[in-house]
Image (cartoon, rainbow, N blue to C red; front, top):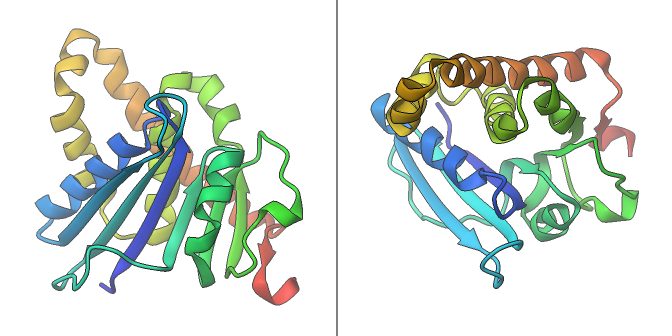
Length: 197
């Protein structure tokens, strides 16, 4: 497996750090190398939260990187904060629930992909928006098996699942929902590719 670099960004409280931590744990349990670095805005609450994640079968040379393979931005401010990490091969994914002007998007990218994750989370439960995004990233990268991610999710949230077993099923559905959103979007063929810009 090649080195996969992911940037997840959202407003504080959207759970991007939890998702990155879960994916890093899943990768580690699969015997892969994983580095997760959290980054928080100056504001303690309400600022943009960014998680940097790298996964590989081989030793990862540096904890930081300049360009990501996949960026998932969950707010307009998150788009602005992550544009610099987008390169000519980057899949730049954002939520379609907010209006984005072309000038807000990165200058360089391999593909722009908008998915209705917020809308889908309203169908399931708004608290699983981050898990939907995790499913979408897993589908785009194929860097970690879904089963391993479920196991890591169990380790992180098992105590909550014991109290409310419905949460387990809801989180599993959220992973699959995120994967399906990407599959459906890629089948639709309406996303913006670098070659068409």
